Amino acid sequence: MEQTKIQSIISSLPENKDERIQAILALAGCYSYSDEFYPQDTAQYEQNAEVLAQLIDTEEKRKCKRAAQKALAKLNYKPAGPLWRELANRKDMGEEILMPSCSDCVSDEVAPVVHTLFKTLFALPSGVPINRDQYSQFQAAVSVMLGKATTAMQDVYRLAGTNTGWISQLKRIPDYEGDNVSRWMINEQLSFWSIAPEELPTELAKIFPVVLATSIVRSMDKRLMDLADELHTQYGASWLIPVFMKALTTQTPEVVFDTFSQHLENTNAQLICNVLGMLDYSESKKSTQVWINWGNHGGLIIRPVVLDERWIYRLSDNPKESKPRVTLQGIGTQYHDYDEMLLKLLPNKVEDRTLKQKLTEYFSIRFKFDKEKNKLYQDALRRFV
Image (spheres, rainbow, N blue to C red):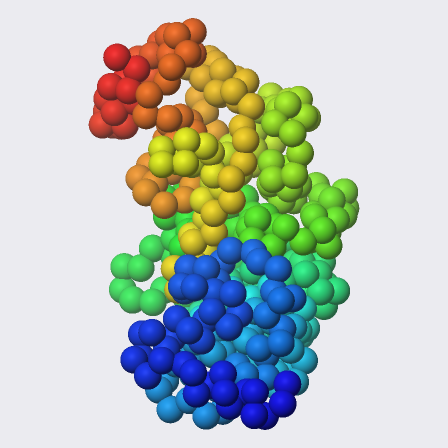
């Protein structure tokens, strides 16, 4: 783009700070900060890359400069590579700027930094507690992987796959006296709060499969979907999580149920339920959505899915039996509980009389067996009166 055109666009930006931020974000198709996490075809905005690059160099207002960085990170603008590399090498790995991006240019600069960090950590003796700085870097690296699909980033997942045993034995040094080190807050979605120490290795092994599942939801990139199949074929176990998430977002509801409901009968039941725990019925949209709050800067990722009603019938079978823990539920979760997961899949008002009767019976029996969650069951039964 000619310099006179660049200057013309910059001169036309509003002077008011908030309006200027909105106008800068709009140059990459973002009309608010929340738009960063919605996949878009950015090709039509590539012509604005040079404008954004110049704004990064010339903007005096910090928030406006940051808005220009966020907008440019959405685009495949190779000359910005050194900037992304610089941000990725910071202690926080430039998470606020780089996490929302699915750009291949950003991915190729972030991946080597992330790969080096994890390779260094995985070289430590298994079970040796990591310190606070290592924990912070681990958190940032996991979050910034979001949606990035280049070969270099795929190799990070492959590295994680070969080191699942190490990851499952992760330990950390207490931050303060009385700190419960079996609690892990990787980010808003990846949090393990009420896990028995003997169950923690199984939960920690889910970290990278959940990163991949979330990345698929974020970018819907076929390269990541193929990677999910590859890793599940090679390692099995928790890598079923991204495979199931891929199916939910790409296949018909009937095929998904027929293929994956069988896992409710085997040791994979908890994995299936953890993915279902990332879904939520939206009353405003009158539909089910994947609902994931990612990272440490409040990135909300939403994608509609259609859930076969047979899931509800199947999940509400056998109310007297113990149910798998559902530890990876999203916003508003109190108990990290199977029944809480089931309730989140339901509308406030169930119209089908047969289903309503089944759910009433299910939650009535569950209420008798678990008085500690009486509020949950009272709320559930109130819906079906």
